[in-house]
Length: 247
Image 1 (cartoon, rainbow, N blue to C red):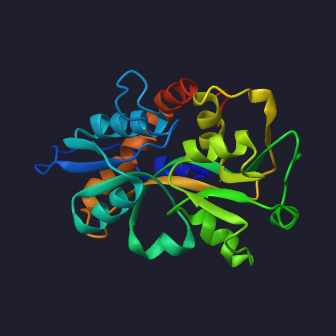
Image 2: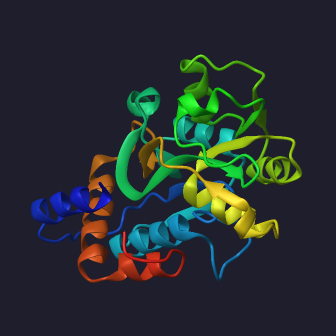
């Protein structure tokens, strides 16, 4: 999906120019490894590295701040010159943000251990006694829409907690993004051979999103920058630093 959208941008914008905006853009991020990683300038995460490249190519000044995820989502709605890195474009959020550029496609999956076996659908998950999800994300709402209650759904405050719950047998499954789950599991030092990834139950595109009053000319320059760095190979070079294989 990202590839198709970038192709449309390339076709629509032959190039971009113009002086840098006088107003610094407040770029907000949260700890969502491997897409955004605080306090790691060498490997700040795919999304952060990509967004930095976009702002540099478009010659737009910015500041970068890491905040708790719920606060970052709130702050971007309060600041007209703010953007947020890594927001999935879903129906419940569509009208609340300006969707500036797509960053990467992700898949929502159930992670389990070999003891439980693969869970490939929401229907298969109904037999489980406990499903852990990160609080204040769409995952709990997604399960609630399908008739799941608490328990078996057990929200936690971080994906690190969710990984530990799954590894310790305190949860039968963990619903999250595939890239996020794999990265967190490895960061915790757990055996990758014990983690089982189910088939995607949905796919979402993660965006650089903005306040609804974010200047459209600035948004257009960022879209043009994405088209440019996709065309010259910069996008793929950044992606290769974090993930295996082309997108």
